Length: 322
Image (cartoon, rainbow, N blue to C red; front, side, top):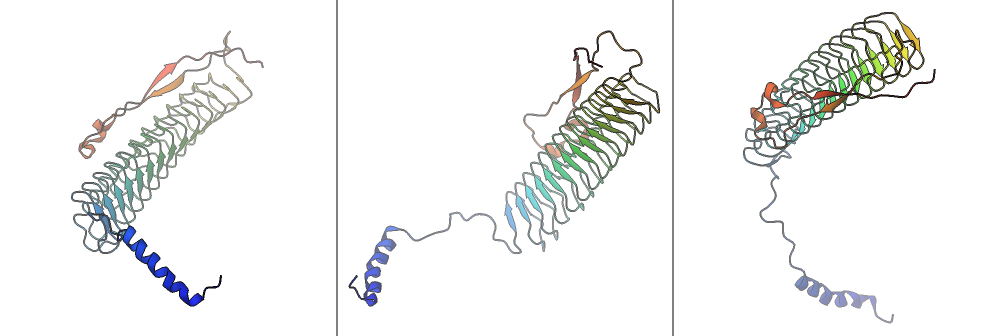
């Protein structure tokens, strides 16, 4: 280029001066964002983290969020009243009134309005969806994904509910798995049940050790135990019968109280085959959830949300070729 390298710094000086004049001095936003408190603490909102003393790594965004924590660590609360009474560690609440009444429960995650609202000492629960695990107080290791899933659970533990209204009525039942909207919806104290499919084991209340795979499989079972139904509407009319096994669409669907039956194949066998095959009633859910929720921390379990209503819809099918 013909220029001495030693002259380059001299050429850059005017450029620096021009840039300095064009671009204003970098400044932080004003007013500064909330946070920057000692011990990796962030608080935004009236009375957020109001009582904190030596707790480390807490984040509270929303009025009265994490209001009561003093020495608790690594909690995150986003939403008015979230984790309001919490004094424990490692809890995460996102949504108005989520984990509102939690005090000593640890490692809980609640995402959704009033999710895990009444949890007190339950540990390692996960609730995703408005009102999921709403009434839980001491139950631990529960997973609820879907609006009102496991809503009524109080002390039941190790339950899994995936789907709106799944295991809705469960109170103390444990080790239940429900995958599908309104699956095991009426279960209260039954244990070790598995329901996969929309409305599977819908009416079960106290029955245990049942497995239903398929839409509306074992849907009318209430107190029957140790039944296995694989296929849509399989053993769907069973109420109190136990130890039955049916594989196939509508297999054993007429059985009500019989026990120790085995049926393999589509609609096999029926006690009284109808002239024109008609499938059992299919339940359609209808939830009533408040469009606007105000002062959720004043709600009680009885007034918080009406129970989902399942309305019958008649479904007819053409004759099944045997």
